[in-house]
Length: 182
Image (cartoon, rainbow, N blue to C red; front, side, top):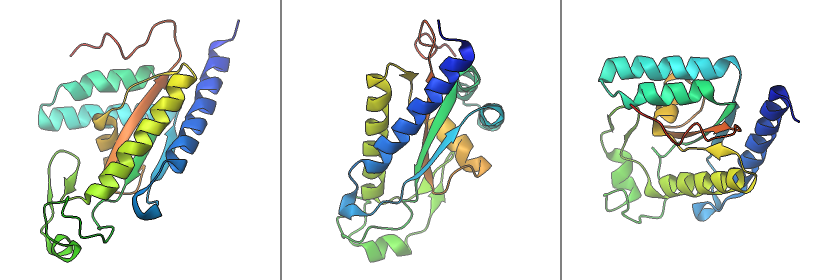
């Protein structure tokens, strides 16, 4: 039987393979602006504390629930992009007619993110996340994609960019992400 320490090490190896999957995922125009970080140990507590702080500031109680999930996790994979600059295709996906208009737009923020954002970078992030969680699934490591983790990671300066998603990872007899309650 594998020890708890051995399971945690295995989850960290899976997080590394997930990072490879994210890095090699297709990117629009072949421009890779993905920032990837694996968080474990004491940094999990830092993330959870920041999530609780944001919950207190905003009244968004789901952040407390998600913080509990982070504390129970073996690792978290962070994936972020800087979508504040356009990829230069004038596609209009951001809501502006051209990338020049996008560059001139006033930036505004919500809880954690600011925009407008280049839709091509947003899609790159989504494809990378999908590739990463596919790898976790193939290797039977429980995971859940969380906006809340990404917001806390951005506030703590753990990653570069203006959009981030976190993927907590766990290997237990029952998924800790399944029966979550507020």
